[in-house]
Image (cartoon, rainbow, N blue to C red):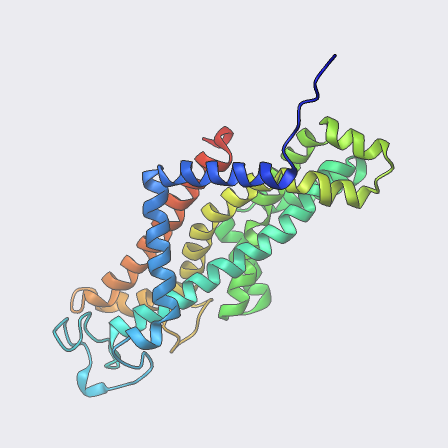
Length: 292
């Protein structure tokens, strides 16, 4: 006589996996540092009006190029605007740029990867040739081409950076789908008559999402850096928007006279990109150790 072994319900299994992942992540020093930094940046962005000591757009020519002091902790710019207030409000713009850009790339890249990997044949060939064309250009050059076509501006910069990031998500998703569709649970769903869309988006996609989460965290820092580069070149945020890349561009002519104009926006970019990279590394080790 055999005794049936009870298997835990799916929700219990997911809860157990989630708890283990959280415990593993909490022991990852780099990931926790990145998470704390990101939470501080998000809090700064959310509460910017309450934290910033001055209006970031308020012009006071009489106070132009004042060095850091007790009144202006990070000095003032060429128009007398408080640099600290502009850096604080710049957190909002940079985080929004990274989130929107990666959301565009993630949604389109995953869709292309799933369709190419599962359908195969001509669909795979056509979609992957498009991705190969995009990969032929360095991501920043591709973003420049896209923003030239769309026109300068913060919104267009987000779209351009998103387009330039699509290939990374498409390639990793396609590879995961090619591996996943050979698993028994996919073959069982097919044998039971599940539709193509059901197999792709209800059975395969949830099981390959972990590498895309890791990629999204890592690419957010890259997207923020690319967005700052576009603004630095005058193709992203436009004056008087308090955006870090634009602030660097406006302060580069005064580096020898007013070092604070470039130092503090540069530190903002560095800390944000470092936070996303550390967080991405932590998520990679927890969610998808194969990428380590």
